[in-house]
Length: 262
Image (cartoon, rainbow, N blue to C red; front, side, top):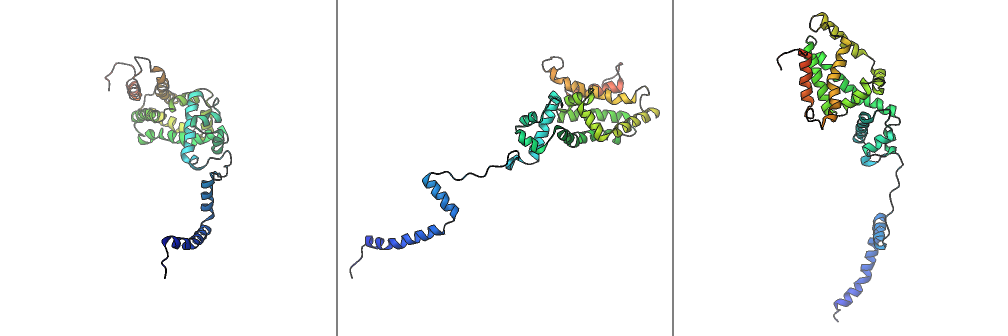
């Protein structure tokens, strides 16, 4: 029998190989075939459907984005006031679109209520802790409150300016909203404690209870709010929370008369 050359064998096998290739081609998933065809012809693959406007997608959702908006709002409120700040400005400050801002907060009033509930209420609650922990020691309670105010201001740089602009000042919108939501029960409890300490001889009877907290805030928050103006002041530019705390405690404990420094 004549020997068949290798070339003739390849020719005879070719139809079978072609048929097998066609079978494999038909068995491939449609998406794979379409992708291959696009790559060969050079056509771009079909784009994903556009998302609905105004609704954040993927990584743009979640608590961290909402928190960024709250942080941006606090920074702007402290810098230029609540009334003069729009939702659009807050969105830009956070690096978001106005549509994304409206996805989380429809109005400035809604945003302000969230800030009060989630940011101010917890801070406000901590201010009462020194009085709860020191019911019979007003000096310790007021000293710890001073230190707590300094700590809050250090952890939240927006706090001093915002408190001066929106709580202490006349017509502050934040103070009005906080009073509407929480009332004055905590304030009355604190004033009652001060009056009791005075009757028990634990606190200077000459103090006006309603002015104690105002005085304390003035001694702590006002210097912190003004500290940005001292950057080029060679005398006061190095004054920080530690120095202010020492000054306030010394003033409250010993007044302005001569005495031993702590």
